[in-house]
Length: 357
Ligand SMILES: CC(C)(COP(=O)(O)OP(=O)(O)OC[C@H]1O[C@@H](n2cnc3c(N)ncnc32)[C@H](O)[C@@H]1OP(=O)(O)O)[C@@H](O)C(=O)NCCC(=O)NCCS
Image (cartoon, rainbow, N blue to C red):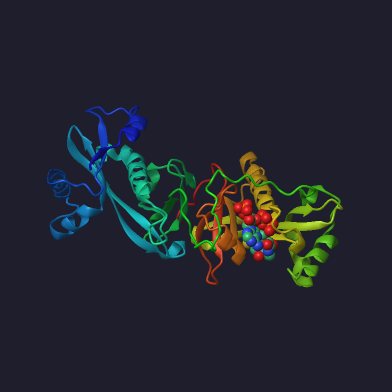
């Protein structure tokens, strides 16, 4: 069934079109002969696709853009595993728009994303989101921010030919199979608060916990050997302590070049003492670190990094928090290390994606 995307159109109705309004039709899975012929002649006319290749592309078409009844643009998507993003399965977006309707690019992406998301049933084999590859010209037409809204589309690097890579996850997408019996919380249903009696404070702004206390805590817990613990002290951002003022959790951060993202990010770690786990201290520390670093970025106090990166080594966290975007902290899955850790990022609001350079 062909649906006209009236909601999308409502949102873009303020855009002026000198020779008439553009409308987006979602045609996925419902391409009748007339629309197929219109598309074939559109592609042929723009010397984009013809013959068998065009026929093969027809079933992949998701949206058609018309102005004054004529086809002036089309979007399509194909499924692929994406090596850059931990080999997870995504839809890859393609589109052709006439120059005169180039401003409709974001609306076409949004309509295509919505149509594909509507089909997403959460199966582990199904694509979990939509990827975009932007040529330098397309990139310059769009906001340089690392995070676009509606859909929330994040910067994820550059591919070999210089195109910028972005991705948007469908709601409730998972990047790992949850452990049996685990009820995965949907976003928004995350009522966790750090257990009572704990305090999370910036390490440099408190006196209850000393450097020696943290080194002793790390080594006692078997988290770090003494020389590494001594070295890591310089990276402490936050400390969680119990009622008695003893350290129970630590968050460290250090500026690191993240090559696939061609940017510097705060490489942040969280450790919670064995006796204090499951009190939402890890979530609390991650959230506090995120907000503190984001505030420093927003105020201009420290703009050396565009965001935060986490490597999730813990099998527990991988299996119990398998959401593509973590609820509450909003860290998004962006790939895997060679040792299988999940890499997650959070970009500061307003931070720009880097140039390919
Ligand atoms: C991994 C670690 C940081 C988690 O710390 P924590 O304070 O226990 O985690 P939280 O209480 O904030 O829990 C975070 C989420 O993971 C879940 N979770 C954590 N440990 C769990 C476990 N053993 N079983 C089931 N769920 C678990 C929690 O239920 C929570 O989700 P919820 O709010 O939906 O319930 C901590 O166990 C740790 O430091 N481990 C050793 C070091 C390590 O592996 N560090 C790697 C950090 S990536």
